[in-house]
Image (cartoon, rainbow, N blue to C red; front, side, top):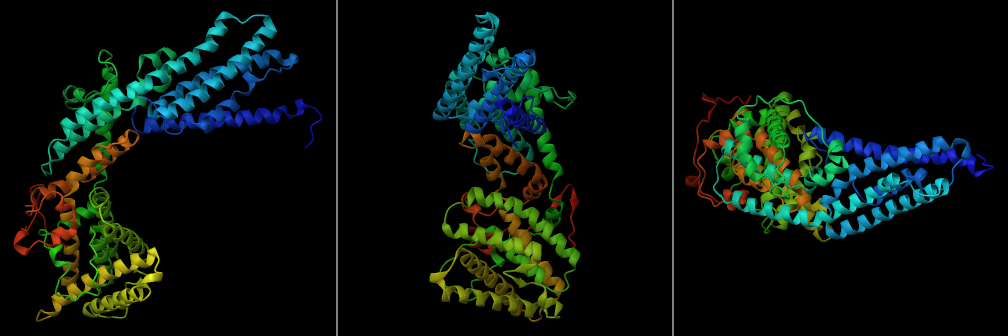
Length: 566
């Protein structure tokens, strides 16, 4: 490649400008698709936001307007290209400005200074070109060039006050909405709560406020940023719902009411999202929960009469105990491959809720943190490879060993891992600590079941052992899920404004998926535990048998549910 004159390099410069413009277009299109995917009438900035990268791309895309040199032979083409570039600049500004809403004061100042310098540079170059060509700048052209700068500054100046105003309104409504601390499992009540917070989070988003503001509409940016959906207004009680949830709409100006079309779409978006989440209900988990007869499993999984391996106290996490019981079930003989797959599906669906419970409520204590990490490490190995700490779980079953021998084998393997860790404790790594915790849990649970059956006159059949293990899993899941109301309530709100919408979407997804789980919990009589203690498995385990109510069957959808394990 050789260039004899600067003009020879112009095609490559043009390609450079075209690539930068294409990247901007792709980012704007991605924001548009993201908005459509989430059923919005406006396009929130997720990919095309005002930052150093986007400013660099805009500067490259504006190469033609700032170029003071032009080829006289193609002057009309150059002018047309510059005009198109200016229109493209307007379009980019229209799409990028809502991102100002989520910036703090320092970020806003830095980015606005950089953007103003870029716009002023473009203006100065265009003024110089206009004076050089016709001797004076056309007033209309002059206004068109100054207008973007004035518009950008006018929007930026309103952002800090708007953010504070919206945040103040949000916190006032949050204080009124989050008063109740009672535990209940009413899907309808939680649906109303989620919709209230959805309206607060959506309309309290400064990006949304900017997109719907009158200043933005003057620039024509509301036309660029909104989309009309085909919708059916025949939804049941839609007008009544709009009237109920209008109270939770946040506005910068009291006299500037949002249109009914926007309010209806905002409400419809959460309704659709809940409906989609309901369709993702955990069918396999529901079948597993039907095998539970109460909360006895939270006591029966670990017996204090089993001698401890170590003197340290290791706190039990919901997820690690469930994963360990699942590993034990897979190791047992007479469990078909189809039943193993169904059990793994059930456990995975249950662990989705358990993870949220642990992340929201079990966030105190280093021991629980390590226990959760151990459950993730072991859980992947059990699900994908049907192994536990690199030990083939089905090895003994293939050799024809009995369930009694398998329990003893699992206990022996766990003891060896614990011994290796204690012998090299000072040189241990994180994964060794997690293995140690997982091994200690396996020892406690496997030997508890072994001790339980060894004291009986006859060792039970393989089917009875499998029923017992799966019932333990179901009982522990059920006890853990009593915390879902608190999780949903906590997920409805987030202190960080930029994370608020994602948090309420998570709450809505949990609520939709757990609809039938909440129905099952309605028939359960909760033990005498305070709301904070209910989040911890060890608190449940400390209860006595008489504190746990037995439920022989679940009344579900008006039918008596029978459970088939094998």
